[in-house]
Image (cartoon, rainbow, N blue to C red; front, side, top):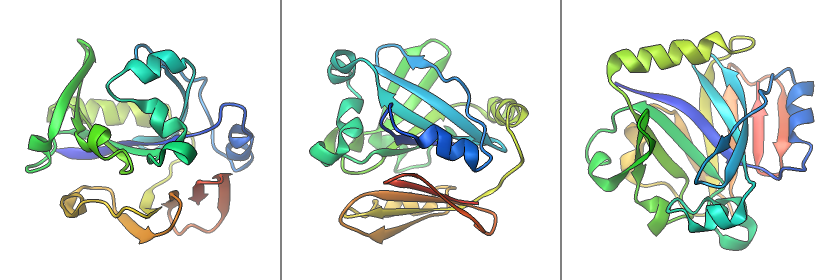
Length: 205
């Protein structure tokens, strides 16, 4: 079993992205920190998934961590992608063999694609390692905290670095287009209205 758990986008902590989302009818939680990673987040949920807005709150910690999320946070300067896609379940081959295991605590084990380190210009690709029952339980838990029910129809990633061919089979409905700067559009339903969350992130819902 493999399902999309959430999409992440790095943001500026002092930006007005929270106000823009709330004006568009999205509900943001208070968020949490990620010990060891040097990051903090806020989340807005849709159905059994969510959008995670992330920023670095401890630069020294982020710079020392293997994930090196500081590079994604300063994507303008580093050339890294500010986006990530996190699944739940198990990656299929050959993707699974291209990953390393990250276990921040005993309750969570993640498969992290090696391009996280080797090709940071690609989005972060991660899978929360869960069996089928745990996948269903997590999806139900996320849905239980969601606001109005929304269905993610597709994600359009604008990038100068097209994603690897092996990603085409992932359950994301991801489409890539060529662009000089990274940009992500999340489309819900028929995408009747547009919210420019940040300069690099748009929601159509």
